[in-house]
Length: 524
Image 1 (cartoon, rainbow, N blue to C red):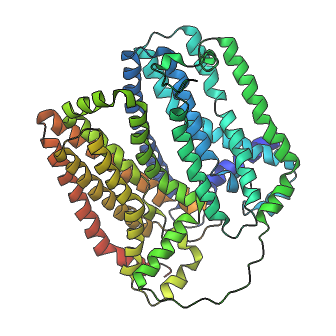
Image 2: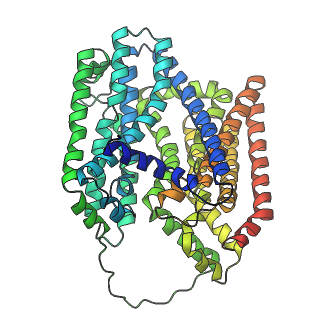
Image 3: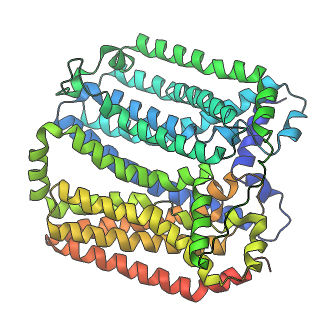
């Protein structure tokens, strides 16, 4: 007989990815759709893992060449832990608290402690899967290029299973505290969104802010990492101590939230009554402008949506800043090296700037209308105006930042004018193209009936296929630029914009020909 905890974990697994709904759906083609989605997930996973392997190979090669063997695993594991915490804290409300089927779940023959423990444990298992996908390539390439001892490999194996425990526990505590504090606020979604963005920024900047010594001078070599940070990767007994301490810390939210689960959920789900209406001056606005303001408010009023859509933009902005701050002492040498190898580096720089559009804001903007789409459809609005407003939000939130970062940091890092112009054109054209493709996919695979907002934001086909198209587009830009640059220095900088504008014209053509028809078919 299965334990209650195992049954609860199975329920969450089937419900989190929409598998249960597809398996028990009476609609024709549900199983075929499940297989199609599974194939897309496998392909997307392969593309993401290939990109991680590329960066792992580059990081391992850099660490081996700079004799940074002692700092390699501590830095990689620390960065993954910070990213895990930043992304987990945004998903606590909705996974652990505030879920729509709360009344049905608490009526099951299980204790609230078991229910809370299952939900927190599922958060850990998700983080463990993500951490393993990231860390395994770094472990393999690092072990192949640097002479680590057998004890170090045993430490890495042990720490790999326990490193997600601490960020998961901290994220649950912080997420629960934020959910309780903002439960009665009128603009709680906006407050949560701003907080989550600040957490991601802090997680990215923390390694840089702590890279100095006590006297304010920069550490010249990562080999000078504190002994306590290196110990879990050098001594097996230290790895065991880390594992035991992480497990102890992880048990704290399970015990505390298990005892107060019903009280916390009641506080979070109870809404404060709306304030009294105050008469305001009537303002007029154009249709597209009004729709644009509505879409912007929707983007920043939903934490899960904004974090999914804007995390790429945040990373694309912060990483060049971190790079410049990290090498501030040798910045002139960096510029000289970039200028001498602009033809080879420019494709990688351009592809990284396209990280800002890996999840376009349009990939679920139709689905987020949900059951209230009929209100938008019944308004005196043309379908083209609705689609245009959704594209404008993507251009403002993801394309424009990517273009500005490519222009500013391309020049600061030492790329010549020609390569900066090529990168700017590529980012502008391909980002806009990805937004158009994502909008088409959302029109083709809309999810208008949902209970949890995570369904259209994270578990829909349009989300899966949009990310797949984005990774393919990013990979093709990088491949075309790198291959052409190996033949001729300027050929890559010419061919990349040509390919990106071809994708843009294809996207706009399909959107013009099919977009309005697909929009008109909604709710029919």
